[in-house]
Amino acid sequence: MKDDIDRPERDGSGSRGAPKGKLRYLLAVDSVDFKTVETNDPIILGRQVLEKRGLRPSEAFSLFNILPNGDFEDVRPDEELDLREDGIERLIAFSTDRVFRATLNGRVIAWGVASIPESALRHLAGIGPDESVFLEVRGGTDRLVPEGGHGDLDPNGTEAFITAPRPRAYFFVVNGKRYESAEPRLTGLQIKARVENWNPEHDLLLEGHGDDPDRVIADDEYVDLDALHGPVRLSPVPKANFG
Image (cartoon, rainbow, N blue to C red; front, side, top):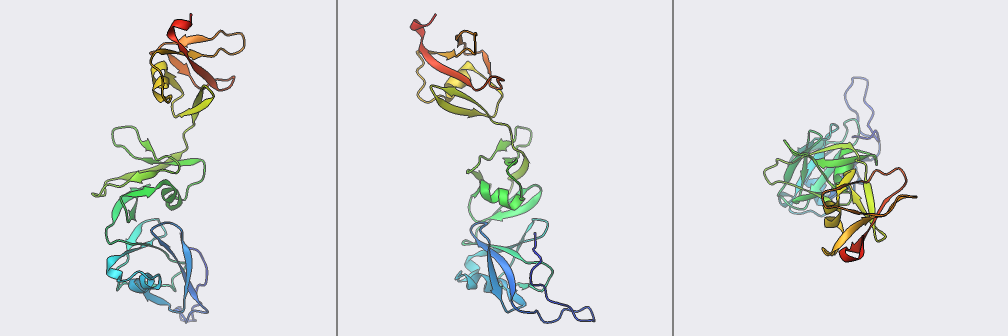
């Protein structure tokens, strides 16, 4: 969204007067790390934006203006940007002329490489810590883009990302190591598959809580991870030594 800084005054006829002091715009290169750039020119060209950052020749790079609604608008090298408009322009440049396009909450976005960081998607969507980014899967289950991960972009521009409340994380502990799960319950076989270097000659032992005894979990038996009495703790035991 545009910020209200350094807007020129208008004369009595309603037309724009000369800008007072310097004008500003925001520019990021290959990222969403936007930096403020000052200029005396009320109207600049796309190539001037690029060349000011040493991106020459301008035809070898791509430049986009992020509109107030979040859509990315291509800025050609000879296209004018009027900095006297209300608010401040947010521009993003990529050090390549190849662009991958996708949608984020229905808005068109662009990126200069075949994967976009989850942190960039979060920034562009303007979401807080209680929300997550998902890759929309039509006819299937939307896939979470993990925190610190990346979303792959299809060169055909078909990827669609959406945001939604952050899913609750469940976890279990095996030999003191914590494993997270997006599912509230898992089978014994699913738990074994997630444990590093699981020995197939071992059984999976669920530690009892309070007066409950320890017991072996069968491969097809579900373990409820949403336990009220604390984390679910399990351990491997040799088959011949238990029971």
